[in-house]
Length: 186
Ligand SMILES: Cc1cc2nc3c(=O)[nH]c(=O)nc-3n(C[C@H](O)[C@H](O)[C@H](O)COP(=O)(O)O)c2cc1C
Image (cartoon, rainbow, N blue to C red; front, side, top):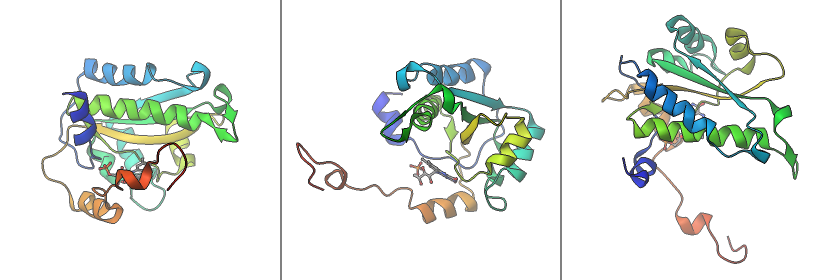
């Protein structure tokens, strides 16, 4: 896909076909993370790639911040947990760059995946303690985000449609609301 097409067409995907992701494609997606920029190039990110169906089911059932909000990930062939060691990144202007580093890397993975026709959905509504428990993540490592990865189903589920409506997912602010030139004028 042309790069601008990847950016323009990308959207969050919440229903997945029962189709595996080829190993070489998954490797390319992980490579997109590895090549990401980071605070002083410290590369504080680490990823857990879950393909074991029982563990995916466990995450689907128990990782949600409330109730079964993450239940839809049960059908994804891969769930990736983006983690970081904050001690390996840094802080400037009271901003913790481990979050920025890991977010950039995860987004690069999502765009790389979309280029292969693979959808994902950034998930923040998880219970970090539960995710740690399920995956044996040590206490010094923060769980920044998780996402299912898989080929989108043609038809969206009612859950997907509802979340999109709630979040008004198609809506974006006009450029003149978010950009000013030379001096602050917003
Ligand atoms: C930081 C962040 C947290 C998000 N958390 C969730 C989440 O917990 N559950 C969910 O279904 N979608 C989540 N999303 C997806 C957003 O709802 C989605 O990106 C937004 O509505 C725009 O839709 P689009 O990605 O289809 O363009 C999150 C996205 C971001 C960037």
